[in-house]
Image (tube, rainbow, N blue to C red):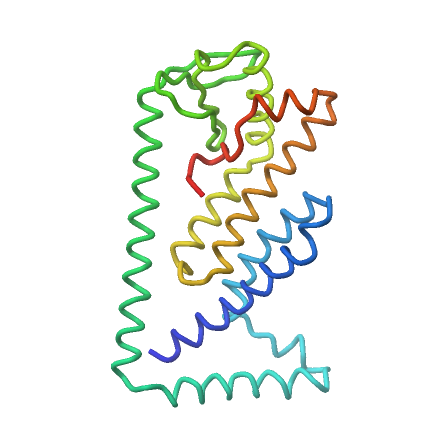
Length: 236
């Protein structure tokens, strides 16, 4: 049991560091594509580095070989000096219960998305394949599909919306959203993960808006026409 706690501690500590770095430093910059890479790398690296043997990378360092065993020793002492087996049992139960709840939540969102897809019909707007909705749902995209109810928007507004979603599709932004959602299922207890999820959504909107405005579209009209947070369908 302590091994699981130590593993989660290491992973979530690094996730917090990546999250803090983004919000304190990178978020203020306009290197949105680089930020996207940083956020995705942060999730992947945090979840995999405890399983990677870093001995070869630090064998020539005079500092790291002394630091790494010290960290592991301190974490082991933390695990051994616990409040007892009952504490770890309760903590383990809470971890798995929370994970099951978040997994069920994600599954329900997929089911809802499937229902929306089944109730939509294929159409083409400006050489762009979309799924036309009858429900009052804000436009969104998922994988390579755009979902929109054209009756809710005027033609000029619809063009801006479709151009916005076209970029989400072209850039495969759904991959970022799905990665953050699965990360949330496992590390739901870490506030850094919730912040990372928010950062990923926010950053891909920054990327999309920047690409749209570079095409000369009126900024005020665009901001008024296009709702935020449409990629991936999942709620924040």
